[in-house]
Image (cartoon, rainbow, N blue to C red; front, side, top):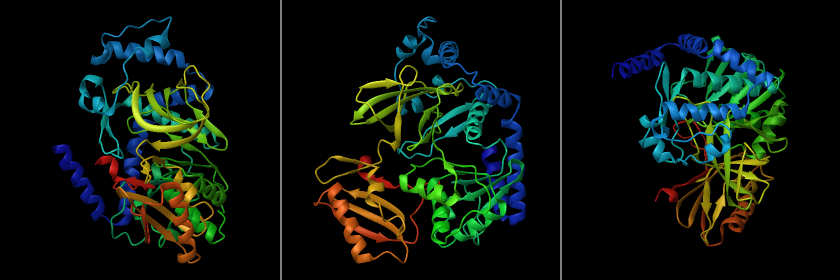
Length: 450
């Protein structure tokens, strides 16, 4: 209770302070986080990743022994040091409800630890414990991914976050500096097409060498630049979108605007291992961080089961996470430890689909096809299904959009993919509403909750 009162007090003081004090408070918090996360353990882990000295077989064996020794629900497991993968595959799979309901029995709370929470996209909020070792290892691997793409640790970076770092009456100044980490933070929930020019100007002054965060927000800046024939007058080494699905047209626009490689990433708040790359260059499974299992769910579509080497406080083991990828294979089962898995696309949440008029599922990749060729006219796009045969089409468009002709073509495409028997309601808005976490969901299907 005292901690909650202190947190509330700090929150109140922060928002009642002038902006320069908010910058100072953000930087002070950044210094605290830097001191906590970027220690000798971080440096050792980062150096091992760079040198390629992390052995996936040894990591898996160490995880199994940790489970048996320290995690109650795994005390009776059998471990054969000569058949590590066989011992692993004998473990039961786990679903979100088990992790949520048996959290204490599945955790090892020793030393310093914190609580990590999911954003609740699937409708089920979840928390897990994360030790000092866990978040240090995660930071080391994130920086290793960036290092592989030309970004050195602690380079200037711009981050688009869902955190509430600016008040509603922000007067178009909704970014804060974290000087300790050489970082500028943008509040995604306050970004609109009307104020995006202010964001670009602040980025131009700050000149970040990397950009990370929500692709829908980064894309708004990219669209502004492309529409105004602006080219960044500083070097951006790479862009690292996270937390949302990276649609192909968004990737193309960001690459064109910033002249930088865009590195898509997959992980999770629960602590899933990493996948990173792009559809064009291919995705890399980070075997140093865990094991991915893939179970065929449809033609080329696979459900993921994840096991992380990075989480010791609450180990994530054979966890049915509810996310899907596209793999060029027809095998029923694959795993990243033994098989050469070629991921061609990260599809995201299993629930991010629409229901066609004939009852079949239409996955989230349809969103990109619906607006293909209209990227210059349609700034933002979202499909919402709350009734069985009604789909709302939320769009932010520019002056070149021809309501009658362009809507007719988009309606035709919707009918082709989702059926003639649905009603399609077009809703033209100034901005697509964001969730509480600042994310934009390109598909919202409330029918899966009913």
